[in-house]
Image (tube, rainbow, N blue to C red; front, side, top):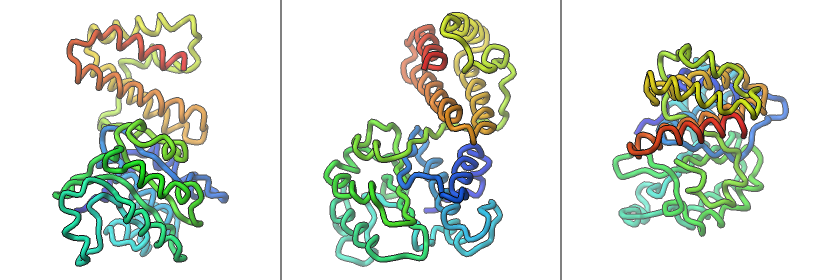
Length: 298
């Protein structure tokens, strides 16, 4: 199944700009372990594949680059870029039958990765860990399909990989993966949607420069948000807040503290949307209060 998306740079321009600046820094300022988390695993995989393309590009990493490495990644035929799931096996081997009903990425697969990494490569090797069903639909990692025993078998490799090796984990929530893996990875929340019309004029008056708001102004921030929600609905207001955050992420990719602040707040808004959609009886005022607290005080 084809997972690469040629439009990914339009979908997550701010995240890719962040990775590109890190990759093309003379010190290659990007972690060898990345953890993408959020509700949309397909988008995470698209993002991971483009990071792999940037790591292997022999030119300047532009979307239209026609170098052989970029071509291979787009076609998902690059010899050093692999998507690892519980169902992966060498076609035609005796393992094929064993994958039917297989519930996790096992220790045998872990040993295969370690063995593979013992051989030098001219490429930047990228291993993307996730799950998938028999139809090829991508699923998130969790402690069932990526159990502790397998994680532990790879732990030293994750911590001290060979040169030019990157591991990327795709999951819904960081708590779904054992903490020893999470602690070794640089985590990025990947929003579920990027709205085509990225307007935020409705919320701009009260949210502009919100990160400079003092602790004594939290209640005022909360009241303004509540008033807009009463008039326009929670989902619409939250989506506009996310649009504003996306614009801030895009313009602050070089300012690491603010970049991570906006990414964390994007995740908090996503959580608020999920709470309301999954629990219709949820008190919206409680959700707004919690969100205001996180955005202003954390």
